[in-house]
Image (cartoon, rainbow, N blue to C red):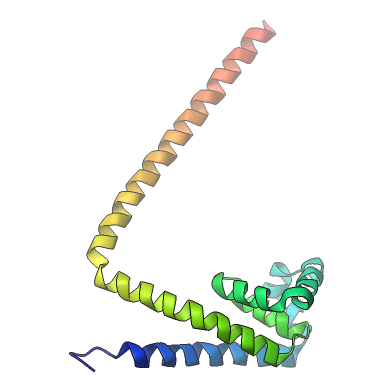
Length: 161
């Protein structure tokens, strides 16, 4: 430990272990609930029965790809992991693919976080400039759309006369 900072080599593995254990807990709870987990309100909306069938088919064909991709998409990770357990994916298969995906995503995300913390002022300035550009683009697009609409309506009125 140097000047109040934790060592990268201690932080990354401990964070990865915590995330992995959380994923396993989620998987075991969903396995215990079974398909009833998919019938509860938030998951029922995200994964109605037709989607559940497609997901189950995808898990049979390419479970690894589904688990790896779900880990990378915020908001889909937990529902896909719950569905994987409820739809019968083996725990060992899930754990292996989850660990493999975690070995890639955790160091990348933590590196981005460290970089962002080290360059916070620069990033805030960049975000402010991007926000201004997006605002100008939105106003310009809206104005162009309104002008286009008015021009087309004017042309239609001429045809009606």
